Amino acid sequence: MRTFLLFLACLVFAVVSVTGFRGTKTTRNPIEIFPDMVRQAKVKEQAPSLFFPDRRASRYPVTGTVPTSDPVDQPYLNTGMIGDYWGDGIPISVTAETLKKGKERFEIFCSACHGAAGSGNGIATQYGLVGVPNYHSDHTRQMPDGQIFYVITHGQGLMLGYGANLSVEERWTVVAYIRALQLSQNATLADVPIAERPELEGK
Ligand code: HEC
Image (cartoon, rainbow, N blue to C red):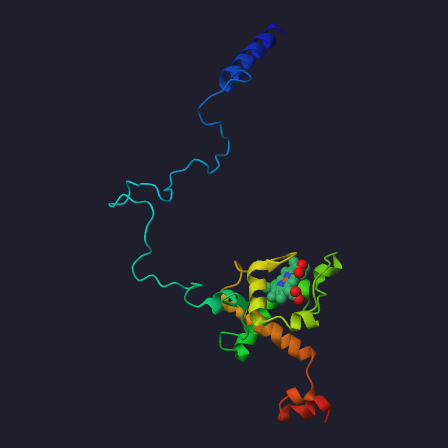
């Protein structure tokens, strides 16, 4: 028992000497079992740095850098807007390949909510997600292409943006694919090439 009490006294003394009395303040860094990245060797913007010969931490882009998505250069392509208004039209070339790519991206990123045909009945709606619009409603059908691009980029209401997941070009392929889905649900025989009509008519 005596040994135990002695041991306990030593333990209390050791703990108090490491952690300090309650309310004691220190200017030292807290003890971190798993160090986070608050304290690290880094260069802060607009601050001097001894690393570079000109002593500036902020650097110019490397000579010959080509901007890939500069809204100033190609505003419609990169934002879906022309001035203060939504633009209309797909600013990349639309081929069968484009639609294939758009379908692939759509099925990965959008169909879980919007449904494979864009009717707003994706698998997530079976688990309680409400308010997913149907692309075949007049509202979505009348949205300019640029606005759809913008919704994909930044999201809208309950929907998050996918600008970080899809490149500018991929977003336009998805817009093109949405237009194809809309056409597919509202087409007449006149939209089908003459050569392929007999097949549809069952002849
Ligand atoms: C997690 C579910 C979810 C995913 C994934 C999702 N959306 Fe949405 N989307 C929504 C919801 C919910 C709304 C309605 C948002 C609102 O207005 O409140 C919406 C709205 C939209 C609209 C506007 C339609 C209208 O008539 O207002 C478009 C266009 C759209 N989504 C396209 C896409 C595309 C393209 C993708 C894939 C890149 C995508 N969404 C992925 C849930 C989703």
